[in-house]
Length: 311
Image 1 (tube, rainbow, N blue to C red):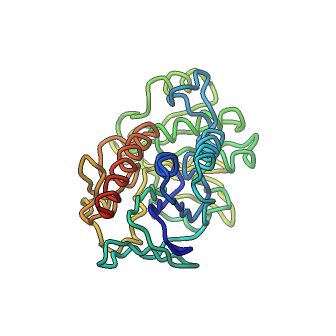
Image 2 (image 1 turned 60 degrees about the vertical axis):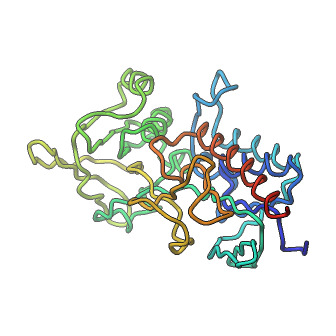
């Protein structure tokens, strides 16, 4: 096996990718993890994770991912290559080539754990004011907004969790939700509802983010009556959903209508030797625990697949 040849290549170092690495490396497979961003992925942005077993008082996302990473390294997963995958291609001889922005590797099996990225609304001011008051990560940027009025767009779990963290920093937090109800967890709703610094606009659409060189306000519209309202804020945190990181596959594997990877119960994709786990996979519910379960299944089945190839 040459220097750039592996048993298993894992694309993505979030919870799914790191769990797959733990299982693959512990089973004795030469394993490479490729990550274009930071180890831990979007979980690093979570202020507090309260529903991952084993941490009764909760744990910061970055701390949890550091533990995952150390465990993968302990079992011999090769140090991460911080490279962006550009292409995945079967070679025809039972191997799969993975080309990055820096090098090219081959493996007997590939586990895609590339996750998802925050969606953008494409409204006026959003792109222009990124880094000037528009943020997609309260944990990363919240400290810059101490004592200011801010808005959180989206009342799913991500929006509520990060909005709760902002309540400790900001002067006030205005939550704007497109749907006619809040769909985040009830425990989060109850805790935030106790704060006199929290305001909610449900069934409202964000029309624009306004400001000259810096966020100064947002304009929202009541979806029921159509009235528009301007709210003065110094920052806007966007949590309006996610889209899968699958562009690099160039249509290689079967995707659903939203671009998520379709797998069977073994986490196998439509291409032999390629598996998919976590938030990039087509499924109804996306949680850290489920990403870990997907990865466990994929790593075990990838090992079985490699044994079949060798036999």
